[in-house]
Image 1 (tube, rainbow, N blue to C red):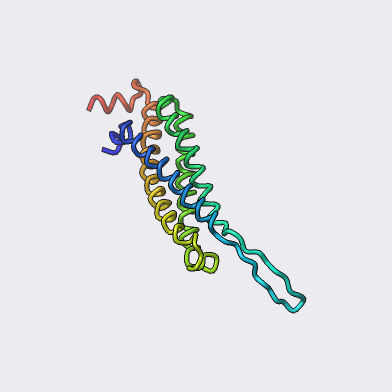
Image 2 (tube, rainbow, N blue to C red):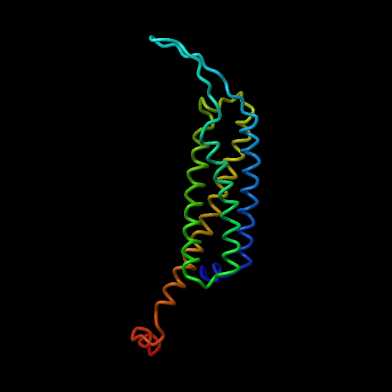
Length: 179
């Protein structure tokens, strides 16, 4: 069942389209949250002196924006690689690497923003924090989509690699066909 699903181009295109759509949604929502976030100046008092520190946009928000941009570029590559060169082994390995990087990036990105929501970096009175919850949810769904596509891509690539390394005239194949 999994191999048939992995080789079905319609399912692959639908999942890739959902990944691209959700990446665009996260780009918009997270970009909006970063835009409306109002950084503030904090007065710090120390024994050795005082200073004003500016607290800007948290790094986790920018990383989620990076994940969405990376997914958009990687998704286009994965679509083209799935269409044009499905039989070349090294392209398959690059597809697995791109999928794995995107999978781990989304996991780290949505978890970092989810931890950041409700903290001092994102107080409830800030305008951008409400839309960040939606970006976190879309990031989690994006991660789930990448769990599915990464699993299917790994199965597809490594099953093809094991099939191509096994010679039809090898003794192991002859034994299997004789049985």
